Length: 194
Image 1 (cartoon, rainbow, N blue to C red):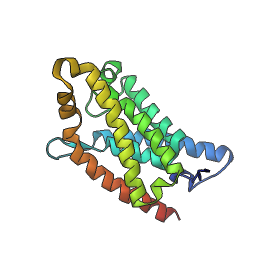
Image 2 (cartoon, rainbow, N blue to C red):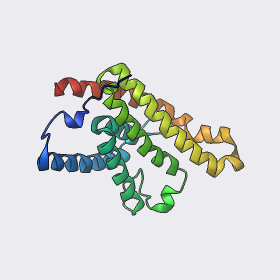
Image 3 (cartoon, rainbow, N blue to C red):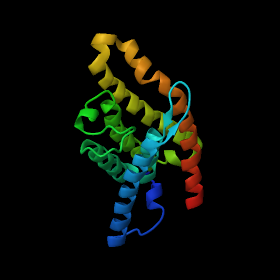
Image 4 (cartoon, one colour):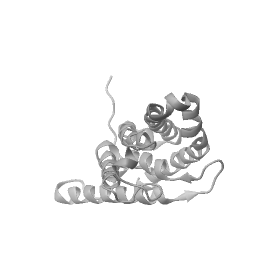
């Protein structure tokens, strides 16, 4: 069965070939890194924990830029954080921060962005239902890697229920809102691009 490979949003505008296309792609990756940094600093008050827009940006970039450029944006962002630049939520950064409890979620960002890029190539980002499904897949990947790392660090001492209680349950309401937002925004951008 053949799979149709669609364009992603980042390919729907601007130069399509040569040096101009390469310059556009560099600009998209640098813009993606900047967007991730900004999104990590946005804190929306909500119960039981504030929402950051970091996961929204990761998943939207993966869908909007595709596997290669979306992944490059996330990896560039993670490299800056590993180098000690305060790009993550809060002011902490460096390798020690990445090895801590959030490290699995950060690694999950790269895998989720790649998955979103693949799903966008299959056209999932063009409809509200498809984008909502893609967001569910991306969010599940982030939680799987993040909770797996937290379990490695804490399950022996606190148990798996504690890991789920601290690492997932407080964030589900915010993730549901981000899913709805992305499911409306990304297909809406496709309508504008057409």
